[in-house]
Image 1 (cartoon, rainbow, N blue to C red):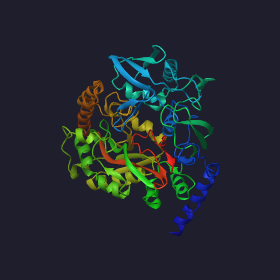
Image 2: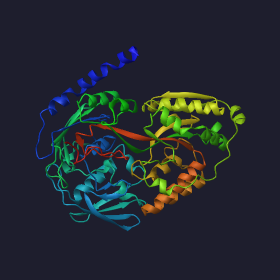
Image 3: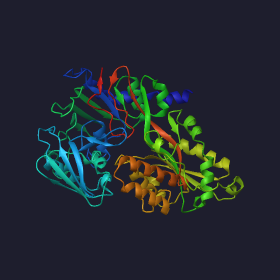
Image 4: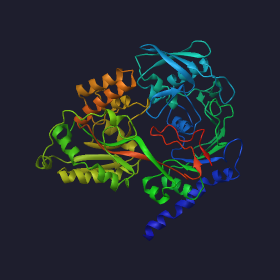
Length: 502
């Protein structure tokens, strides 16, 4: 016990040191026209591309309420008005969007030329934003307040796609010197005014916001990758909001500071359907029967996760209503047959702290069924190429099932079709491809959701992936003092115009 305490004791000091500048600049408070002082927020992922909207930093900008696109999403992933007030589909590949009367944070007017400029720049970015990896679009101005968007192929999900943070709309001032700088050139309720590398950022209230004015006068942000340090910063009142509190720290903080909610992430065991032991459907079925999801929820996640339900969990609320039973499942091999197989290689990565522990319990469960299992645990960057090449028999990963369009059809296509770009299970099943193609072709949300669950049943029937658990996110803040923090399963919002210290 003394060794454990000696390892952990410096962390509050580390957190305080990391966050001291933030606390100092926030201590005075600025009442402004809001309901309280400045917000102090610690984020988990430092900027990786100098706040470029074309990579993962776009999500950070979205979570801090800095940027907006033509549309936004509701809790079911359906598109809602943002900078566009309405839209209509003119034909299979052509859409018309009517713009809102709004101004950028630098005072320039939001008009059709600005939208065209922003979407065109995103389409020419290198590397290309993931949301545009499977489509090409061309935007043209149809007067000052109307934009026509034409896609290369029919794209029923275009309104959802345009809600992606990488397709944010920025003013002309953002595009100078061959770079894209959203600071002061976006439209959200908060204006990014300063970025200190990968350490900190400052936001101020956007007084000209088209919607409800932000209740907080500003936000002071620090970036701290260490989850324990983020939790300790919250515990010592160095911050008001701590993003992504680790499971191990949640019980130490207590219920008043811990706010958990279902996510769109499913942690699953991908089985190699093409090479090795699991090319045999009976062996995949045996592996699936060996898995005890509840043991993982209780033993690794301390009850702060949901037992496996399918590819899509509670963070996709419509899925349970439309779910159908898996189809055409093979009969599982018996323990004796399993025991005669060669050693299998089970891989996972260290970047998500719970996964190595999950792998250890899964190894025990598979061993109990008769499999001989070797673990490979490394940094994700060292594993991805081999996983995609089919070098492992089984691979444990945490997968966001809503991906870039906030609809699971892109996840299904990338992970489980013959030509899928992220097909770790190496699945190539004509029935699965046909089911996913049917879902992709449908414009109606309800019809597409039903088709997606038919595709889910086909994937689960093939035992290409064994769902392990559905993660819950844990955000940290004092519920008696901080209000308006967004608990978003799609991970796109955190701080909003309503977030403030009461």
